[in-house]
Length: 211
Image 1 (cartoon, rainbow, N blue to C red):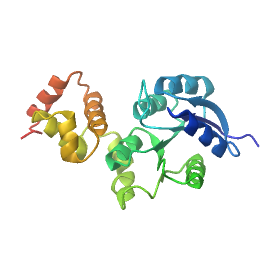
Image 2: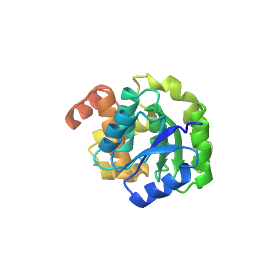
Image 3: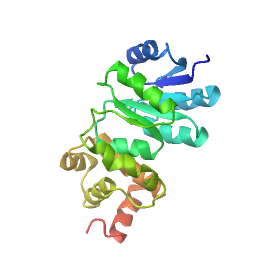
Image 4: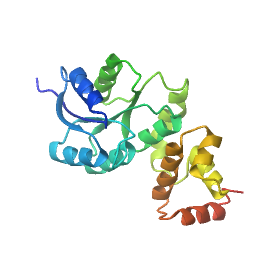
């Protein structure tokens, strides 16, 4: 029986080798990629069934790469394997097309279980994520996908930025990493078709987000 084609993407070579050894008994690993741009190029050439990828990758982060991949290869299944435990980040991953979200602290057997579930058309979120989080965002992913409204966390980030806080200061207040705040900022800008930070603040003022 022909094994499903899979691509692994992470900027840590040792982890890639370990993942390949883990999944190869069931899947045909056709490429190992260390950054987002390399991943997109490989996926376009090899047309895998699934891609296991990290969020934090150089040149193009995993979420942006995943969103691009879903536009190019709508049928591809995206399985995120990351250290990021932020529920909002997981929610955004699913909104942008993810089929599964696991942590790097998950057991190897859990990754295999997730890949099997996704291959059958299912969705998987690691139990290591915040208790009760699955019900809070997975159930509403489809309905949120096409909405023009900002998420609650995006509105919180926008309000703090409109008040003149830096991304680092906003991150401290929201108890998330500066990278997460940056992600929400640029996701909003892309979502609203806004090109500059000044335009984003102007949007906030017009919408009374910062009121």
